[in-house]
Amino acid sequence: MLNFTIDLAKKAGEIILSEKKKLVVEKKSRREIVTNADIAAENYITSRILEKYPNHHILGEESFIKTQDYQHSADLWIIDPIDGTTNFAQGLTEYGVSVGYYHNLAPVVGVIYFPEKNMFFSSQISRGAYLNGNKIHVSNKKDMKDAVLGSLFSYDTDENMIIFDISKKLYREIKTIRFFGSAVLDICFVAQGTLDGTVGYALKPWDTAAAYLIVKEAGAVVTTLKGRPWNIFEKELLVANKFIHPQLVNFFTQILP
Ligand code: IPD
Ligand code: CA
Ligand code: CA
Image (tube, rainbow, N blue to C red):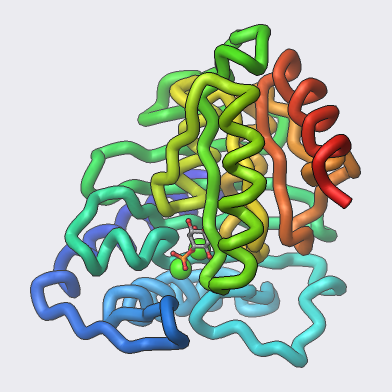
């Protein structure tokens, strides 16, 4: 199943690069967009999964049906065809294809491919996390004041005003913050140790499903901001190495209502 998932993500990446040459951008809301590449990549991934596993279910960003009960799907594939669509449409290279397979809502396989970075991250439960086939691990930085953290925005203006306020307070306590504009990129960077942690506030299952397994297998601690256990339907996410994570939970517990 891992090789199948890697192949899916890589071929979807090729489709995205070819669709980019005839880019069509549509607005979903004031700030959120979808492109021909998002649709083509998700259609491709979905049709190949259903061809191989006709009884499995798919939770994909672009084909998501609000009324469908995904919580009870025993075999669930969770897909973000392009995470970082705004980056993609701007010509930035910080975007990735994310494919995760969950059994009874527990992660089994997670693959993320960055088509313009020649990076593919992969993981299977209890088998570690890999970047281009080489094992990876989170950073071992000990103190939050030395931490370089990622942080993620929402598409909602009011929510982002709150995120800016929190970020101002967070910045005082750490080394610095990076806003890359892709949840899967942030989380994979934590997995490979090039970020010491990341903070998400307005996430959907497709932003986190595959990345969660990769970063857990790379040794990270993953919870909500105040340290509650995390699941794929949580909006918020705090990922960091085991030294910095409790310090961040302490910080968020103090500043959040
Ligand atoms: C978004 C990106 C962004 C994050 C948002 C996500 P999309 O995904 O990951 O960095 O802040 O919460 O929705 O729309 O590019 O797939
Ligand atoms: Ca996304
Ligand atoms: Ca997306």
